[in-house]
Length: 272
Image (cartoon, rainbow, N blue to C red; front, top):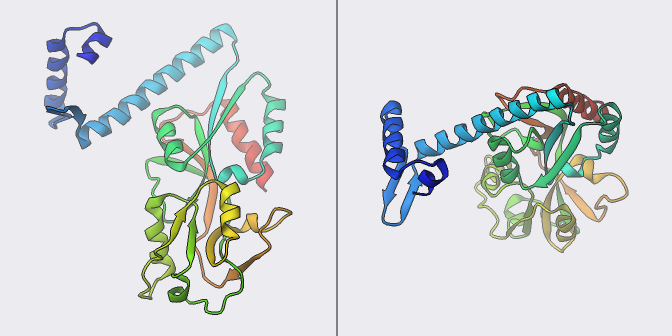
């Protein structure tokens, strides 16, 4: 009924359209129950595609309108919390000097929020760190720089085995879903159970403070272990960790504007 009201149609007409779409695709898109209507897995896929198509149509209409009226364009960039620690301010200055009429919108957020917004077309591109184990097949990825990761411990280490360290407090700065694959990579060939005490924290201001608490194991990108704000009180542990790559994620169907291409080149130049 809500859809019918939004579309200025009758409810039977909307139901008929949905039935015809389901018949055309050969799958059920909606599940109806006493609690309401929800999408099936097939419906969710179609919903994401429809949002992307709608966003691309709106983007095309805006681009044409801007060309006709010479109004400023907008470049919308999503930034993950970890990638926000990379100093790319000079790249922004260089871009604004070349494209002063382009309005920049830079939004910081959790990795899942960033990806959902990119998928729905709210962002043109996203700056994020990607581990080798991350699955981003639905997006194109433009790598910019690559860093090792280090396992660090607060205080002196008497026993640096994983079995002993599993009794410590662990800090994790990625998604909850990526924690177990990381631990399995770290404990390859061993039977150590995952630590019972794991804190997920994507705020680097809070993460830095938590990492200094006694008997805490934390994971750090190499570049954050240098400079004035580096956590010098931490002890490095001798474990091989997978590297992470900083780069731009974009929708595979996204058409780059000249301003977008120049912004990417500015960031590349800054990280060389």
